Length: 262
Image (cartoon, rainbow, N blue to C red):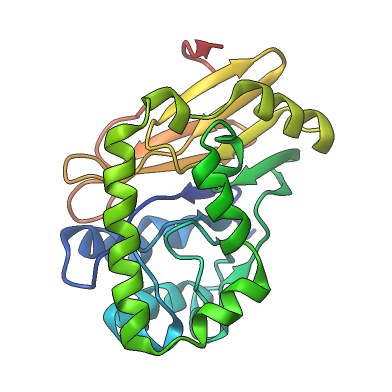
């Protein structure tokens, strides 16, 4: 009897600069290895550090895009949510990779349970400046206008935007850039969900807000790359080694170990 995979994999905030980076090589190993055993893969935003349009960024990441396309050939469903760094991902990307675009936020049924999936910046409601930017980049009309800007100018604008963002982070209180718990609770209530998975904040962890469980995906760093796995047996954090394989030994199961109480 054929045994079908029942474990879903989720990741975010890989922030790939190009295909030559160590993170890109690690991701390629993961996509050719552990990912093939997943029931589905969810990428919840900021896979790329910047994507200024399919016409410009496609060739910079061609090897990664080919690796993503390999999942479709292996019949592993891939879901892709845009983030604030790669909001300009377009039709060519989805056609080439076979990825399915999903809204942000969106409710999907994972392991028999409705789960609210988001890049995560929607919950950072105290960061007013970022919310103004989010209102623009989530608008299809605004994205269409931006993509009509000449490619060279788009590169310049993207570089300046990253510089401004880095400078702004130095000035902002760290708490402002984290989620606002009342906003999290409101989204959970309005979507009738008791579990939320997101990235963006670069503060991986597992939190409890009353009856709501919230899992923050890890951003990838030189010393840590992580996949969150979801199945009927529980939710686990799995570290990757430098080759993109799951590291030896079990990482913690978030539903059975201590989580932070907000």
